[in-house]
Image (cartoon, rainbow, N blue to C red; front, top):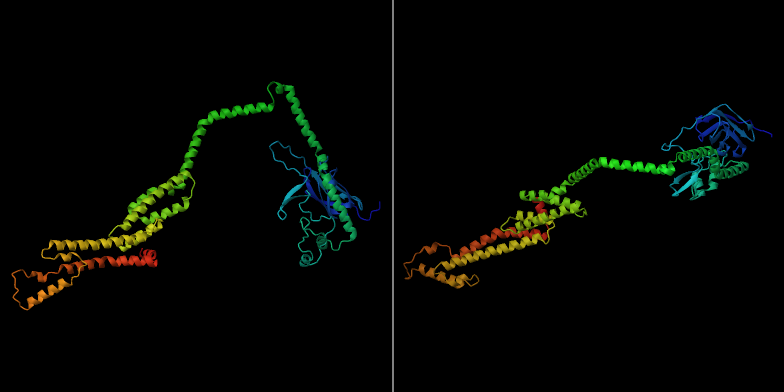
Length: 486
């Protein structure tokens, strides 16, 4: 065989020690011209060619197998250079014995990773999640502008893991100066990688065959020992005995600690109840706080607490919360009735009327409290006027010498006034009509005038506030005025 190149030389390995199936990186010189040129690779006397991945003439990646020697050289063999030498060595460590409950690192044939771009799982080579050089030939980045490539291949990608992968884009970007012969070698490398994937599982089983046999021998030894003791036939299987022992231990523990566990459960329940009471003490104390604030006259505080409780527990489905919230609604309904009675109570000031109207509006009282107040004030003023009239009529009845037509306020008073004026004129003329009666009536206010004065004062004292309340209700400034005054 004619050799045109120097034999391979291994000058480094990383890591330089490890257990079987450790992934290592081999570096050196003249390690082959391509994947097909690599025909042999041994580490500590074990053939590692099946797991080898040729990266370049100075780099190879592989996994260490089940070697017999504890320490040995790394020998690379190529078609073009023959069998090589090594200036470094690899130390094979013995794996620690692993129990049934100990964790262990296991080399898996395929690694599945989740690709977020395609929303699916993909299986790729165990040596690398994304091989830097899938074709196995020298990568030479071209200076072709990236924007021009995107315009040339719209919607495509040079990433070989993408669904829109474009082989032409990848070749232009990474192998624009690669010869046709090297591309043919890359095709051969890809075929070899595909075949290696199907042969890999069998090779891994062959490499770990001794471990499988050791496990089988251990299980057989345990079975033979059980048969020799005779416990399988007399007392049942070992698993059954262990289950009985565990059940007896569990029953004994329950008997011993049942009282303690019961107290613990009771304490936990009490603690949870206290936590609930502490967390929702606002709702639980709200009915009593409403009663206290109503007695103090702090209606604003009651309204604020009610709005807060309504927003938090108005639509709750928890039974205890619904019960306490129903108590709150009962007390709020009683407060609405109390405020409405105070609003309709007469006499009252305009300020108090507006204040009670605002309270009832904030409590969402049914109906229109402002209109009810206006109606009550109207009826109150009419009642006062009628009372004034009835008092005048009673005075007329009790005073002798007054005519009965004075009892009717709607009769024409002109004849009486004319008669009174004519009588006064005759007296001034010095007529002979002289009586011995008392003249003190000249200095007394007539009943009608007194009645009109009294009625006028009554109307003047009540009508202005009534008129202001009506104007505020009509123009919509009732609540704004209340807020400004408060």
